[in-house]
Image 1 (cartoon, helix red, strand yellow):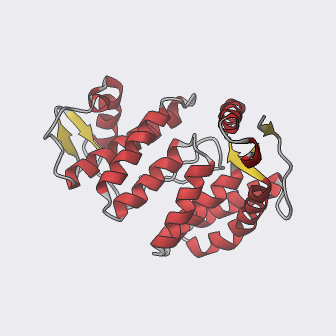
Image 2: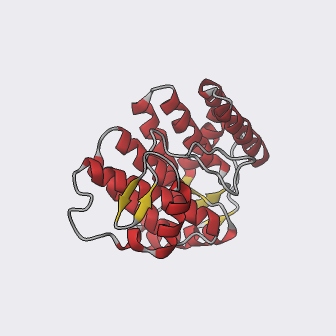
Length: 247
């Protein structure tokens, strides 16, 4: 069975990881992406040391930890005995380090390197709609519209499981905006059946509120969609002090 509360490797303990993430978040907000990397690299090194011994996932809550543990156990049951590895769930800050490094590398225009860390953040925290949205945005920035659209759709679906209503609304609205922009670039917006998500009353109201009176908005069947931005908004809701929001 997967185990909770897995042991943390040196040099970074959970408390130090949280402090590093808070400082890295402040560096991003202050417009200092280069300052992020030395802060998060020790946290990433610790995560990589843990990954040598076991499969590691990050959880943001006890409920997520339980879901991930059950998923790990189910995957283990399907794996031949000689190929099985231990598995554990760790604090969310270890995956936040991967994400923040990817985010900083984008600001530093090191796009290929950024993809690796955004992908790893998503793979290690598979229940995070935010990380999946950001990984989808990387593909949109690379003009890989089909892939971006598929990932935004997955992020929207994943958001349905979020117990935090504000975070759910934020991440699902982000995913809808990404899907719409991808469809525009693929020449498909308005050319086929309407995605039911676009017509859901709660999203129509939310998007209208966010977009009301603003220039650069798109209208589709009375549904207002905020215009896309170059980088996806970074929103840590319950994880980081202050958070980051570029929307």
